[in-house]
Length: 145
Image 1 (spheres, rainbow, N blue to C red):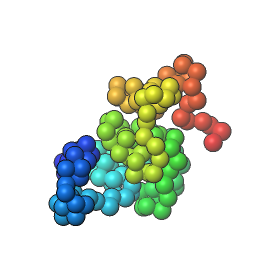
Image 2: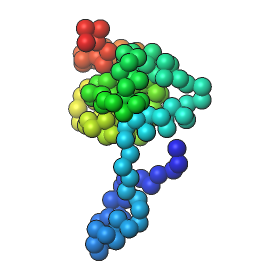
Image 3: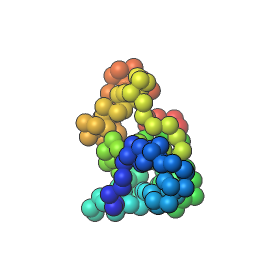
C-alpha cells in the first residue's frame, strides 16, 4: 500500500483551511471500500491466500469471499477476527474496523483493551481468545454463532 497521510495530519490541514474547498482541493480525501483495503492487505502478506485468512480468522469461507468482493460488511467481532486472520497491526486493525462501519477498539473498554493489547503484542486469534477467557470476557470466536 502506498504511504498515506495520517488522519491526524489531515484533520490539522482541514482545520487550518480557510474554507472546506481549500482542503478538498488538496485531493487527500478518498472513497475507499473495505473490499479494496482487504485486497491491499492481502497483497502485502507474501504468499497469504484468502483460504489462509478465513482459516486463521475462523470465519466461514463464503462470508470472507463475499467481504473481499464487497458484497457484505462484517459485524464488529467478525471484523476483529478478520484483522487477526490478516495479521494486522494496530493501525491496520483500526482502519479495517472503520471501513467495516463499526467502532474502533477503545482502550477505556475492558474487553477492547485486552484485544488491543493482543493485537499490539502480535498475538493470534486463539491467543487473544485465551486472554479474553482468562480475564472473564466474552471471546471473539464462539462455536455457537
